Image 1 (spheres, rainbow, N blue to C red):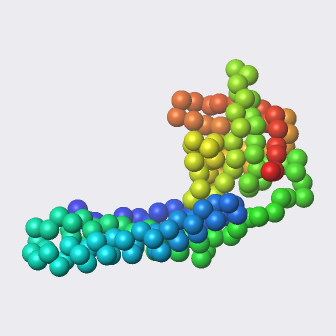
Image 2 (cartoon, rainbow, N blue to C red):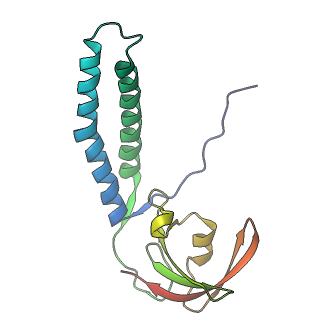
Image 3 (cartoon, rainbow, N blue to C red):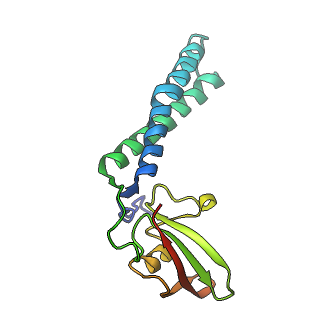
Length: 165
């Protein structure tokens, strides 16, 4: 059995200005605050002698690898990201960054924001532009019917409001 894994599907490079700032803040926090603390702890643990059974040293080195991996990822994503920081001229159509209020068949309204894949967050109702819901909503207009295929079957929605804050 080979260890080959096919490459991951290419993700969209769009990101909102708020999302880019959050990524820059995380990068700055990791590189300027957390990494120096962990490096100092690893250095102090290394001075204690035998490193093979030194938990502080082993876990500190593991944490450094995690930080470095995340820093490389954030740096790479920020280099290739396209920041979308202006509203479109046609605000009656759903585009990237829009807050969209949709109503389902039962009359329940839900508001979601279409954002880049690096900044989606269920708790804030941010959905990735690569998600089936966002793909169904993009380039639709107010009062359009939208059908989304979900694991439980087809869901139908009506676009009630489009807002660019």
